[in-house]
Every structure is written in C-alpha cells, then in structure tokens.
Length: 336
Image (cartoon, rainbow, N blue to C red; front, side, top):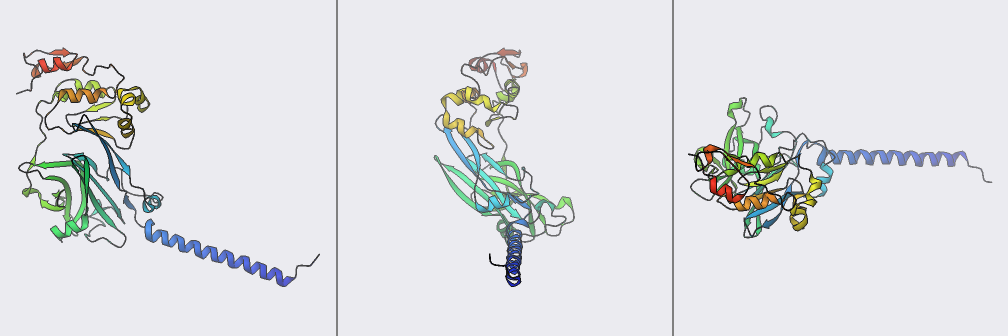
C-alpha cells in the first residue's frame, strides 16, 4: 500500500481550501447580484391579468385575476414586501379592467418621509395596465405612472392610485381612475390632492376639469328590500352592478350548485383569485340578477323567498313579503 506523502496532503488541503474560498466568493457574488436585482426593492406589487367569460349573451361577465408568472415574480416572492394586498388595484367597471403593479425601493405613500421622486431609480417601475372590452376581446394598454406624472407636472410626485375603482365622465364616454399626487418635498398632509387618469389616453387631469357621473340608484331593489341581506347571510354578495362570494360562503358547496353542475367553465373562473360576476347592462334587470344569484345555490332554490318590501318602496304604501320576481315587479316601486 502506497504511503500518502506530506506533500500530497498539503496539495489536497490546498485544493479543498481553494474550492471552499471559491464557493464562498461565488455565493457572496450571487447574494450581491440578488440584492441588486431584487432584494433592495421592498415595495413590490406583482402584475395580474383578467380571465373572463360572458354569460347570457353579453349581459354578464364572469372574471378573475391571474398572477402573471415570470422569473422576476418568482424571485420577488422570496423578498419581504411592505406593500399590502390593498395596494394592488384590480378593478372592473364600465367595460374596463384596470391593474397597477410596481417594483420600488420604498413606499410611495410615505412621500412626507422618504419618497419624493417622479423619476424611477435604476430597476424601479410603476405601471398601470388597462384592458378595454371591444366586442368579446380585450385591448390592452400600458402606461408608465412616473412618466404620466412628469408629463402633467414635473413638480408633482405619485403617492397612490385609488383602489376604489373607476368613474365615468358625466358628459362623455371617458373612464377614469383617481390618482393621489403631492408636491416634491411636501411636509403637509393637506398637500396630497386627487387627480384623474384618463384610461384611454393615459393622461392625468385636474379634479376640477373632470365631471363624473354618479352611480345610478334607480330601481335599486337589491338594497331597498331585504334581498341583499337575505343573500348576504348565505355568503352571496349582490349589488346592482355585480355578484360575488363572501368569505363565509363554503366554496366546497359550489360543485352542488347550478353553477357547478351546468356551467363548468364559469365554475372554474369563480374558483380563481378575486373572482366576481359583473352585470354589463346599463339598466337594472330583475330577471338577470335572479338568474345569476341562483347560480350559487342548488337547483330549485328560490332566491326571492321571504323578501320584504318596505312600505316606503311599495306601490300601495304597505309592507309586503314576496316570494318571486313577479311579485317584486308587481309591488315594488322606487322611493320618492
């Protein structure tokens, strides 16, 4: 058996040491690269895109929001973000889907402290994606929020895009979302002001230049009767513009419903993230609201059972308890 000489031991040890040092240097370089590309951006909101299907022709729209998968998204998922789930704007109204997403080094809502720029630093971005329904397809536009602000007023800084939703012009077909801006190096909360983003042109407008149309409450039988409360107790949230499922709704029961049994594609969409059903018709439609609401219950369920019409909203000034859409149409009237 050959003896292992002292020289060979030294060479072997040096090889191991060099390998360890090399690995350590490589590991540190990888950490530095990750920090440069991802780790320093502690305010991150990923991009989402809408999935949708029409129902009853084009009277209603089932939709959810799908996370856009990318290498950056996967890497950023390992970085702790200061952004809350409410920072991401995912909204649908008036035929437009809107989503904002960003990768920033700090919180833009903290402008009084450490966010006073409208030019992104290296690696940063803040974008607004707008999807417009044209026929049955979506037309997508993407706007750079920093660039929009600079084009409007180079002295202003973006703070947030309002997550409340969209608004419609009172005298035009323009659609808007609200954005909050403040002057650079502002020290006062009252300096934060609301402006509007034109969703078609990607331009910012002063609030006094935009007249919006208030949501019509005409024939709002959903909230003027006990219809809303009755369904809310069962986990279904209904309005004159949309229907969704509350956290209390047992999702496992969906497969036993009309939706689960008769509409597999719509059922799949409702199982997705942030899913909802939107009504596309301008005028309230009792039959459509009924048909959509009944999708979330077993076949044969009467969603108008024991609905109370207050005296204020009845044709004869008397309270009525009704059990069908026909009775609702017979006794309900809009208040003065």
